[in-house]
Length: 243
Length: 51
Image (cartoon, rainbow over all chains, first blue to last red; front, top):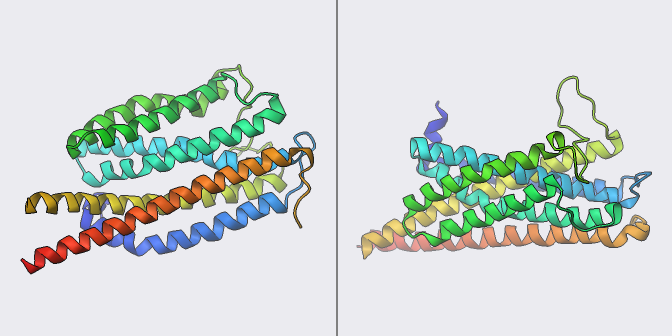
């Protein structure tokens, strides 16, 4: 079976309807224990004190903020090349979730930065590129809302997404190649062979569970919202036929 | 049971509270629009069948 078969809206609705309750259940069973573990059962850091507990919210949402944009980039590219409507609608459905994840990362970063750096905000490469990425998310959502013709809206927003992806890449790698600013580099890389984390297991384990929980939550919301977009497209078509 | 957050109680609780509010809001809006579109589509499909 080819992956392109799921680009058929009927097949997508059938499959997503079947997996959505399972993914939602898994997301709840992963995210809640992860946050309870991180908040209630982990010790304070010897330097950062209790603020280290913000890591279980800040890192997963920042991770998703960048990767949701990357997912939108790929689905927009599929729309532009292969004209699969489900891919354009999936990008549209993902954008508000990505914007909220970016906003949470910005807020939690600011409240973490204040006691640690002595400032809520600094025009650091990562923070600035994150803010620009958030603006691109808002612009993308606004562009979809502003154009009535669905295919034209999908085309233009896909192009906007391509342009904004530069800032998603900068957000991800700014701390590595831009050796200035207050934001630290990646200290807890996802599991790569031969690479060691600089974070103690007592913090790292609930963090990985939290990332998995937030990812599953995103997946559940994405499926739910894409299904809604497909239904809305059908509603528009039926109303146009009636008129 | 509740951890002693000491002088960092405000930033830690603010981070968790903002996350909970924003995530709960997103879930609520997504569920509400899903329900609305499902009902509208069902009504339109029914009208179409009657005709």
